[in-house]
Image (cartoon, rainbow, N blue to C red; front, side, top):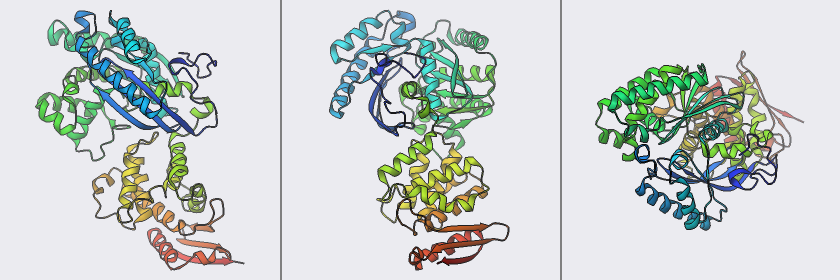
Length: 514
């Protein structure tokens, strides 16, 4: 696979075909990727907005192909049997979904095992799938590109842990820098000779060697991989964190130390049931904890973020033209959702410009969320009216949206909740509201009520709705309407305008221009 996305027509890497023929494309044709890892075999089918692809289908089988690899040098016989069965199923599913060809990559276990080539041949013979075995540095690079798909322009260190290996890659300014691989996979560590003392020394020595190669990495640490996500689930449980979304979940070094202690002191069966972690994964968590503790101690990142995006997403990013990479994944996803589900696609842009005077002094980061909210303001109209506000909040906070911090998810969700409901009191989501401060909650309410009113002035998608004028110091809110639009300002619209004014604590005026 080339480092550059500008591949020749005959060199499209594992996909074997171009995924983004049109640089201005907003949609991604359905594509299936299979990741044959040391611990799990997973099928993901991507669909939707090209810059922020949706997960049309996602299935994982814990096969433990790398179990015992350190002692025998071969793949686990039981793991091979389960992996082959999973791949047969995935190929059958792909046939039913009309996805051809499935793109299949294998990582540490298959590339290191003496019988890896034989397994690749067996899979091709039994399923027709061609497995592309990638080396450790390529695995690190693709995982880092997956992080860039969700966090364009991020700086930091990507740490991807699998069953048999752990990779590090630096990212900065939208580019991947140094990459390195190691043998710090939990499956290997679990069966290491010499017991806990030898294992801890091996981890310490290996991380020190990685640090020599990577140099100082004091920015954000991005955690990729199932074992890291399991630790994050435990951290959420320990903290009583109300939003159970792993992507963009943040932890500190102190929180990780506390969670590792909590894990060591807890009953594993009881803990995994409370946290929703599988028994196979939970068995590896103590070894992953030892690795993470040393990585954090050595690199001392300023904060730590969990990424649900990794090698599979990195393979998509590999082929993206730079113009597509440069787009905002959140806004692209919202455009796609509006075009697919809104009653009047394109109206979100008009709504955004109509209400923007209320937020003229807002920073760009907030205006980005305001634009996203306007694009999403009508995509849940099919929900029952009694539950529409809650459905909007749930969709925004839990949807697979890239480029969103948890606090931004809550702000966006609250704004959309207020698009359909004046009060946020009494909903089942109240514990989540506390993830943003009261000022942000109030701003989300104003945004929601502005959209609620603006949606009443429904004309053609590109037709001006009128004009809002806002003088924050004088607390004066003015609505200017043309003669043509004046009939739209009926009783319900007037009531919503007053509700918006109350949230702004403003006096109102309505002008009709001839």
